Image (cartoon, rainbow over all chains, first blue to last red; front, side):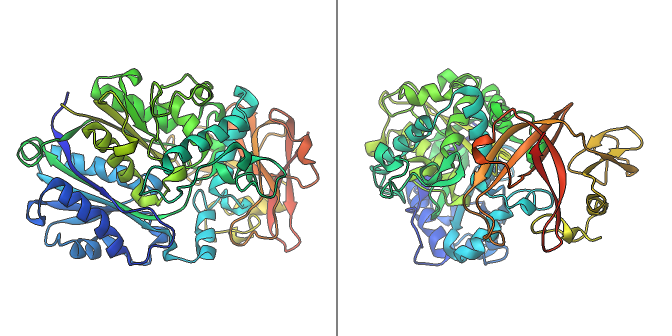
Length: 394
Length: 137
């Protein structure tokens, strides 16, 4: 196992609707927890990286403002963005800074206050989330893009609405027990009953995707503290090592996507790189966090990561294989669907979950059998960017 | 014509591929083809990504394709509120050529199927905006 760069501290705020504070106060919540978790002070931090999706921010160039509030000046700081995968991209950048020998300890802080702008402003920005020149003029939005994949899976792989519903129900099982989740209510099959006005998950958004297939918007922050091997060994009793990193990109325009029946190409490309670097294969992963911005995205993630063959991702939810007690537990913190998806904070929150799992500190969400290898799959846009990061412990 | 005329609502005013809109007005849905290496692009590009040339010509998109996938939007982004529900899809013409657009309003939702034969036609909205749409072949 590579022991070059470790996670020595993790933190996240509660994911909430309408955070009652500014972005600097929101960022401090995750930072405080991660610093106390690592047991260090700002003097030990050599640099900081801030990550968000800038279209939600009113503050221009937030890195400097947040670094000051966190007490991380005069150390170097800058901003990294890859929409929904911003903070796992930040961790990749931090890994490179440490591995190069430039810095010993780096803070990666992801944040998003989606409620910073009005919902009308948000609707307008969401419509411009993909190719503004050639696609947005048709009235596209995120659920519609993922619905194109869901439709192709239904027509070609026998995927059903029932399968998608099972992904949502699984997520809610863990949202209920995750006190940091924005959506803490259980979801039941009757919530998806077509034609029942009481069924709050059943309404169409972008057919075949329904309300219950879409993740919960939230305000939130996450913080990951990275250290080189020497610092990790002196500062941390339970360092968790980054043993594999993969990242990829794909054409933004749907007209340039090779095959909608094979899911997102970045999932395959990023996981192949990460598995190769870690010297492991899919079957070695004991617990995973995948990017379930929509239910279909979790099914595609199973396949991209090699947990299931192409078109067979649905079998894992049918067999409950990705529940906490299953052969490969996935998103047992509620995922984006129930824990929530504060864009820039999401990747760091996924990493926090996996680090806590590997340390045996995940509380009611803890996977049995002392997992030693965990994986984080974080997608930006409609598979425009993809990061897969693999973690291990001694 | 400026590119702000393209689509239900355009977010781009200036592009070297603005001739696309003039061709739409003539009833043509066109992509670009590199004069130096023959690489074809849709959506159109002003620069060839294969050989770095900027000598581009226009070619008309094929007429016969299959609907690869589709979705019906029941909510719309800001500026499109009066449109839902509307169906959008991807047409595969074969040979690596694809296109994304809305389906014509007169196709009944229950008649839309993955794999169905489709073609494309230019479209002019009441407010003068120019676009193109997918229709049954």
